[in-house]
Image 1 (cartoon, one colour):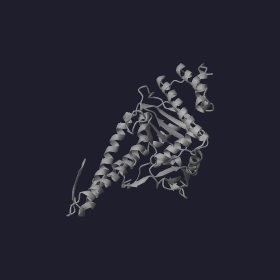
Image 2 (spheres, helix red, strand yellow):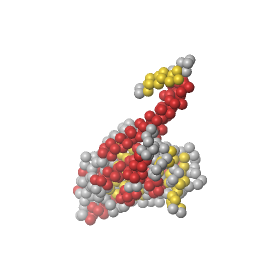
Image 3 (cartoon, rainbow, N blue to C red):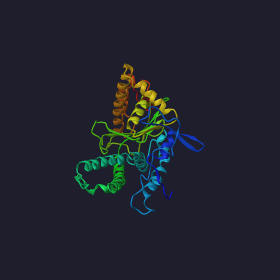
Image 4 (cartoon, rainbow, N blue to C red):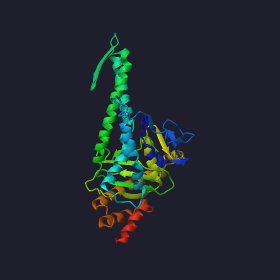
Length: 371
């Protein structure tokens, strides 16, 4: 890997879990946001979510300029398969501090390493430069303009050099800042609760070129370091990781495992689609099924409105149950948990929920009645 110029910002080790294998190669169904339907042919994971020289560091010697790409390859992408197996194994509910850090580090790299921040800043730079050229150019072609950290003073005949230098500065800014924010974020979320949901009904989860979904449960304006953020990430066609808001009571040695139904998967796929930059991706026929589901369940009908309300109520109930579990140190066999389950199982929306049945049976084993 001496000159890895084609660099994956969503690694093959992640995309592989949404693909099928053919002759040792892995393929996905994919659709561009601007298209009405998926591509006619499946896409190789080698050719998707990749940019040329995205992590190549400008102005360094040949042996050093690919250091960041090599770091991602060896320290993130190579260990992710082991972390993935830990996440989807239903028997693993206890983890070490090292494993917790690795879970957050590898999965959240999918947020910080994508080129969306780089591209956003490039669009901003282009707008500022065009504004300077169109409004602050004299008759001799000299452009002088100051705006925040920009101080332009160049002749229009040299604009190509200006553009090149701006891109290099923007690239260096992206490379340094995303690493800095990513490392801070690992420490910031270390005490947050972790849970993996398995979809038990016949619906596939999809993913995208920007798969990490992050928003405040309090409705705060977006801030990556908001402690009220809930973070979600599909990790294969049947499993979904959630990192809960920060909590001083989080059980650092626990990772909870649960199950979710078809409507949860359909709602999740909608969020993944909305959060994508250019591509949504998944197993063959999963993107096609997603489009059909959105047409069916997105229609403005009484049944669909009820589904939306039920989903919101179920999410609120499970958040309250999670908070109780946090206060008990993750112990299910506890009076507080039994009282909450007794309250929840009376509701129609939890009648056939396998997650609820799990709690009921676990409590019954320890003599807690929730009737």
